[in-house]
Length: 129
Image 1 (cartoon, rainbow, N blue to C red):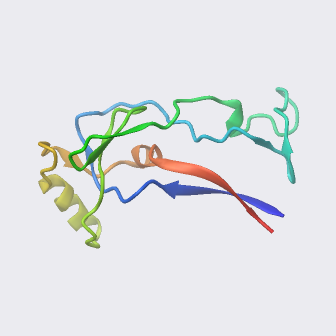
Image 2: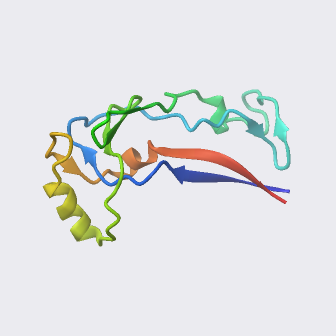
C-alpha cells in the first residue's frame, strides 16, 4: 500500500484582488501522523517522524461566497474570482486579462503569487494499493 499526498485546487480561479496584500499561512488540514507504512500517534520531539505537518496548527481554510462572482478566503482576506471564463491563455495574456478585469466593483485584479495560490489548495491523502 502506497500513500501519497495530493494537492487539489478548489475550483477554477484566475485572479486575486489587490485589496489584501499580507496574509497568514493557511493550514493544510492534515491532522494524522505517518510512519513509513502506517498511521501513528503523534511522535515526541526528537523521535523518528517528528515534525510532520500535523504537528503544527494553522488557520483552518474557510471561504465565503460573496454572491457576486467572487469568493473571500476568510483565513487570508484574499478575494478570488469564483470561476474562470474557460479561455486558455498564455502567461502574458493572463496578465493582461487580470489587469483589465472588472468584477464585483473591483478593477484592481492581478494573478496570485505562489504562496497566495497555495492558500486555496486542499491537501488530501490518497492511498494506492
